[in-house]
Length: 133
Image 1 (cartoon, rainbow, N blue to C red):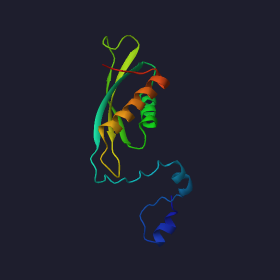
Image 2: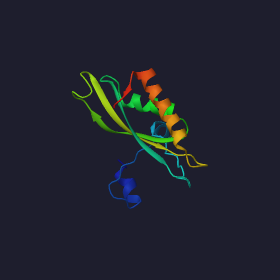
Image 3: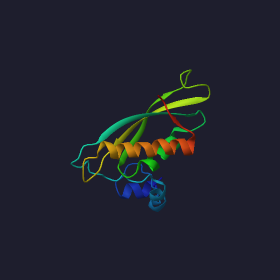
């Protein structure tokens, strides 16, 4: 707390003073999100349901999808999780929303099908995942 005589000299109310190490704060603060223009070309939106072992984290599934999806996969999010008899004991179904977009053209169905096949293969190879029929 600021000494009362100093506060009185400056006509301040009861005042606390502290120092802040901004270098440290900047180092632990989350990164500032980067801006990305939506562009002039439409997105291709698809949903994908994958069944994985119950111990597989949703974040691991998203990481594999991002890695396999290539540069045209601009967003992936989990919007449904199901555990039950339809997927089997010890298994989990995750439904993902995928958004594909290119900055310079409209993506073709064949391009997106190729990326989706790469995602499916990556999920199978790295996590033992299989598409939910």
